[in-house]
Image: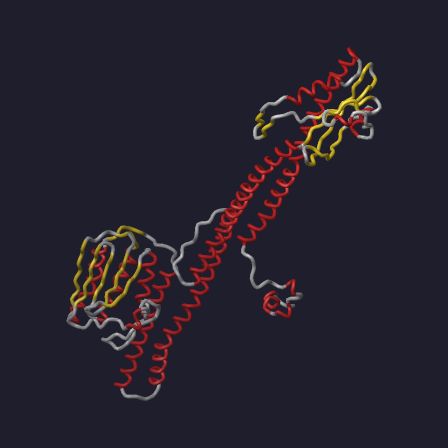
Length: 496
């Protein structure tokens, strides 16, 4: 049975090309935006397109409805005239002659109208034209073939739309007919016609405005989609940045996330990180401890083998002293490793209180007075605007003690060590040989140590790394640098 990893890493096992994973995948943000545009944008376009196509039919329906009223009013008027004077076209002919002569100015919103463009023709019961307001030459012609006339004479609703020549151009005219009844019988048909030129003008303007609205709405939809994609992918971006920072060994705080799913993903991610860190922590310490213990164990083992043989009392005492020395070195390494491990495994401070740095310095220096006096090294404590800090008393004292012990190891006899507290910064300066340039960037690394001038041996290399971890827990920093006048200056910088 092949594993998923084997399939993914072996090109020959991936199957057809269309089933293989692409080398570059589209981003989630782009995918969300694309799907959003396809679904929302496609639906929006379909609705807008349908509405645009519906504008003209609705205008024409409204126009036809008005023509129906007009045709039936004219038919009623003709019926009244026929009852009084007999069925004839004289009445309606006079009305339209005067109507066409009228000039007026009507501003109908965006449309300006100055003359009557309504057309009317009247036929008898056989469909022969009695009157045509648009073309007097049509009088006497047979219009019974037209749908509006034929259907109306048959007692049905008659209407038609016809392209014809008007005012030197082609125009679509909408015709609606109504029957003229005298004594209950259809004596003729009156048809009302109206060119759609004005309606087309209204439709064009309406479509122009509608299209501008569609463009604005489309841009709004696009911007909303972009904002939505950013909003949905922001938690993932933050988690990616957090993961990259951890990968590069930078200090990074857990990002703020929104949404139930995003927070669940973030918690799972954080738990995974802690589990991996715990595993790496154990592996790192096993490797480091093995490396550090190898040298003293080798010394003890070698001395023990030699002690098994015959040797004089002086030589035996020498090797026994070496065993005790290396055993003490082992104890110190284990103790410091345990101290460092306890600090590194913490996620926060315990028993936090307000601390006086000057007072802590005095408490740390007091037990060191005897070895300092023996080596002729003087320690001074100075305070300039010292401020109280919040921290864990034991850890801060351990950090100060490590800096002083380090300064003491590198200070020649007859020199001075200065401890200065200024604001929230505690500085320890010595007059020793300083730190070589090649080692300056590594002195706070775990197990990195320089040879002590007084003993010619290296320390456990845990001291400054221990101080660095303590300051990280306090949200501060350890800064170590050479002094221009010689020696080293180590600073504990506590946050404000």
